[in-house]
Image (cartoon, rainbow over all chains, first blue to last red; front, side, top):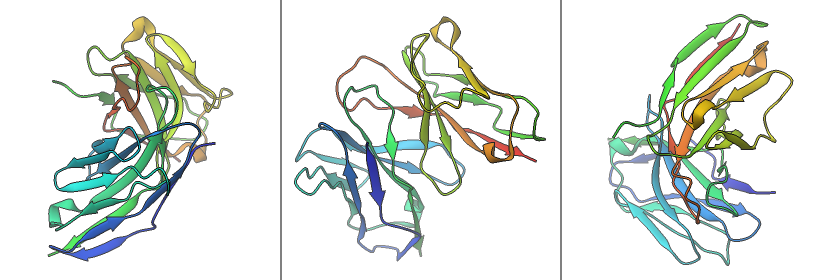
Length: 113
Length: 116
């Protein structure tokens, strides 16, 4: 079956530091890959996505590249801000576009000023 | 544009009592999902609707959980009777349902259930 593995948290960084959150997956077929973010007290929001190999998703300074050869979709940001503190979820859909998402366990990111 | 609406936001009940959650998806979205999120975990799919038809309910514990989506718009998820282990956040999401890869799902704020 499908599965997503993320690095364990919490991850604590200082403001303006470089961020990487690792995500690897196993899936049947050719999945679409997503990063969702959950800010304190809010619902899940789509951060970025990529639908085929070598695609790069980007939003709000965050980037992730769909690497089929390493089955990875690592999230990166060059300079984090305190406002980036949240829980980040890597997820995938395999097969049809309207299937349910398979999520990782989430990575809690804490940015200190 | 209004997002996915869920109610109630919080619910506290005693075990063996029934409970129901309501979801109103984004207007025009044909596909509706219910997910369960346990503390410290990612959401897990319970059921997916295409319009009013449940097309994937393989993860729904049918002995105590039920769901409906009458008229293909609003949906209700029910637990009867609730157990202590049902304490979690219940998320509703919707998408256009036009097919193709990578369709975005939009999530509501969730209902946080505590069973005592």
